[in-house]
Image (cartoon, rainbow, N blue to C red):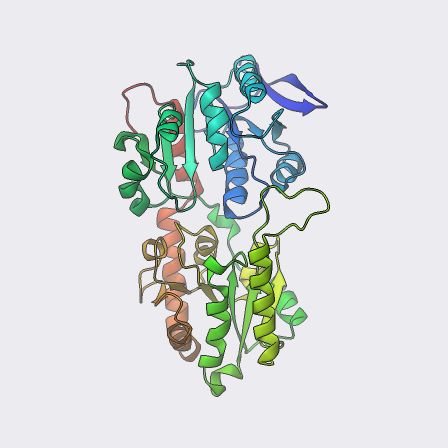
Length: 414
């Protein structure tokens, strides 16, 4: 097997190393460079990093461009994924473009995959005039129109756009000014074998919050951001009625949205999101709900905290397609979600969850009450949610499909 070059960064230079990789899924060895220079650490960043790890496991040689000091860098380092950094992080930097061209050619990169929207600029410019390598872009969030002359110029170099939402795919040509044959539906993948309730973690987390074994824990995992509807969830508690309030607790896992360019010594979070968190804390305190609604901040242990829950609420008012809701479904949790955008694709009302009117806390409470009063419906919808995840979001299928896109020749379809 011939050697394959891949890269890591050492104090301002690119150190090329030789490695031998086994081949799986019948693939020829490929080298793929991923871009994710985001400073944040949410669903987009976690999924992009997970995807890199899975592609490497599938036999591809994987490298990444990230930002020093970011949580993305920390993940890549912990998982021994080769990484490098740009000389500058502005959208258009001649130094970065020259650096990328050299990096891509010297390392025999076959495809470039962009995950963070700003990274499309340096990647597209670096690959101008290079007809041998493909450029792909994943779109993870709802988008506004990017159909001006500059974006059309940048998008013209992209060989394929991936989205997880069929609804977005229908709108994409108008929003981005790209032909339909460049837009591909690529469902999110999850290693479903990892999604199983851990009874030990369930007991430990619930005990730390003084939640009894017979109490119902309703939880959410979202950024503390006005668009995520966290206040809608908190306010629904008082609509439950006295009887249900006695046996129910709420759990909010998440932190305010992080700034994308926070300098040392500056606050880490967006000011309007910090203010939203203060409003949430004030609401809990003013209504004496400190022992009923728990705000526990960001938590790395997603499986552990989902294990502790009995019902999952996703109150986001405008979500493209939620990864954390998919995680909850994989954990066999029944879902109650705001009836908007991508939530309508994930939740089949009355089958694997319930939808409620957007921003309507009273309607949310009414939906939750059904689950609280009938454990059979709760278990049935949870089982259906798990089945949905198994049928549509197995990581093996996602990786197989993605690698086929990487390998497509001009004129071929997948």
